Length: 265
Ligand SMILES: [Zn+2]
Image (tube, rainbow, N blue to C red; front, side, top):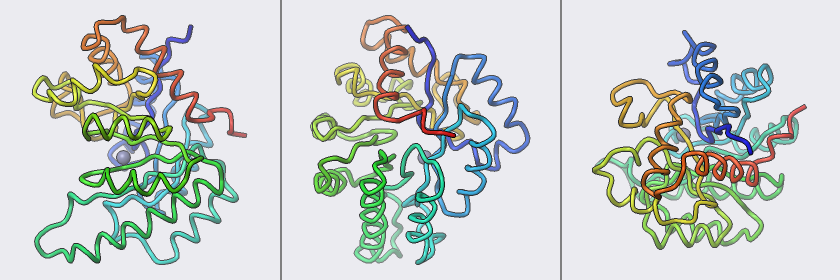
């Protein structure tokens, strides 16, 4: 029985880790975090993620165009993404999705939503075409995301840092999707989220840190890192009244069902 943990969402390529990335990785290994998935946010990150994940076989790349960075994406990036997926090994397409939380008062909402939907739609097409799971980011957009992914019956993936309703959670699970949970569930005020992780089927849950963001309650105010996955697993165990080992074993199995960790050369 494997007691390794998998961080299914960690932005380890970001500059905030440049000074001590090796130490961060060593601490993760010391805490039995065996694999880490690094999803890209813009095309300018792909090369670095490739370099990082080629060097270390327990780091796995996902390539995509994140909806919070619309101003940085170029018209040709979708074509570049397709060529990149043709030539490079990837564990998933992502991070992609829809973020309708970021708009300020100046935003032309209809136009901004349409631009995000265009990028999102094409990344789903690529995921299906290259038979890869998708890593989805969603804020205030889950119903639209559900509507989109229903067009692709073979598509699988994860909605990372899930924060929707119980009904949306079950609709995603019915669609073959997993739900990623991280630091936010460790805060006692997060009643709705904590109720969800204690009642949803364990075989639909994935662990993630979303480092460097969203630290758990025991690391509040600090830069998050993959070694901090344990408090998240521990919280799920406590809320469900089961053993920590069971949470680790099951979520690691889930990650292996969704992602093919063997695809690397
Ligand atoms: Zn992310």
